[in-house]
Length: 292
Image (tube, rainbow, N blue to C red; front, side):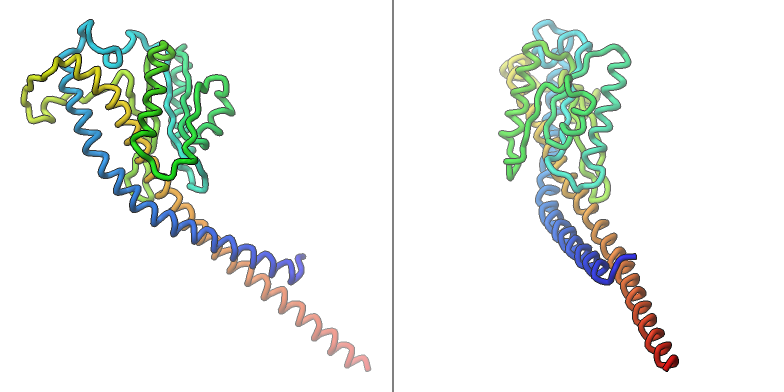
């Protein structure tokens, strides 16, 4: 049975932990506002660019002179999984959900006899994946030193992906990230980015209009496809940032409440133990007085 001093130390330690989790919750809440605003602002641009490119790509689909980023290699034997997670933990199942989706896709592809490689963005995803796929991880991009995500970070990742594609290291690239819906809902998402998959109704999304392009569609695609790749990666990064802060805010709120419940139970146990010791001392005093 722990002494009163041990119980007091436990209560003090739990209160200190509660203060930390409460502070982390408030910090996550303040950062969430900016991250959510950035994610919501990026969605229309990324979506409309994807639609415009889909409209242009439809006119050159199947042509031999179509850019290789658009038509692919003609094979789907080698797959690269671009897994974007957070650099830190204490965010509930946020990182695990993204890794689980990527792991399920990898296992399904390998069961079909495909070759699978991983490109990790974020330390937490890398730490989980290397337990099972250490030999299949081709690169890790660590963004811990980046205070504010910028488009240049996505361009750097996109350049590395394109360099691997030009070396015929993979045929298909799939992006994994978490799409932000609300503080309590983050949706793990898989999106094929090489070769890109556009919506079938891209022309309808542009109002059904038919456009003539200058220069030719092939030249436009050669310029815009790498940029679109960077745009989609940047969108995934800022969606991940908003999802991370939402998940961390929710996790720290739960931790703060659990700490409060532990403090209540520990305080009750402390009071009962203290009362039992006082009662025992009173009984000993009364018994000694009666013996005299």
